[in-house]
Image (cartoon, rainbow, N blue to C red):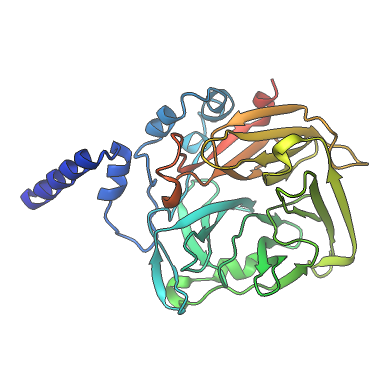
Length: 356
């Protein structure tokens, strides 16, 4: 006990000298008791996270307060931000402290979060959480180092779609892994990456920046500062195989949406809305834009509602009819010293409350 107190005092003195915030000190003190950390990376308690976001009342009225009767007020701790067990470039089991969260999806009884190694030294991963009790269950170590900017779930064929890329040909791709394979995968035992069951390269896309699933279709696209329009490709899914119908896909161009098209990070669709998430860097607020869904076109010129949120919003995903889950990358190691708003949890927002 005495030795621990002396060590803690030394850490506190050092933190005071270099100006570390208390929540960062908490992360530094946390012992590595498991291969992938399951505690919150920056804020010890949910109340501390709330305090850090008090300048965004919409996150309280449509988020924390709207879900006050649910586990953790509808939030999910993002695991692995301090250390994640993955594979190194050499294929050896190795810990990574640079995992950067990107995608999020609701997958039957699970919530899944994708992340990539910022330094590109480790395989990308997907964290699997229990949808009901919010507990971390396991990590899927992906084959290679895709950015994995988005993931989506096809509940009919029970496949998890992942935004991937053919690095040699510099082309975006879509891949899936069956839920049956995910259920039985055990990295701790096998020490191998989980392999894709299917991959389709998309020659017209340099990468896949955003993706979602809606009514047996996959929607995907790529944003570019050189192109002021947001292009979205829609592929039908073959109900017999679960693969994409390559000889029949649709292309939509959404015009007049300012910088949303340039910095689109996520897309989510339900029966009422198409929602876009846009962000770029630590100094610009993220934008959440709601468009009324129409049958004959993807997006109108004007959003029905645009909501300002903290920087570095990545993918969004509908969890049921009117709940939107938000995934931020601001708590990743590379971004912790940037800006003043950091979020180390998934947040839930009630769409009805957002649109009031």
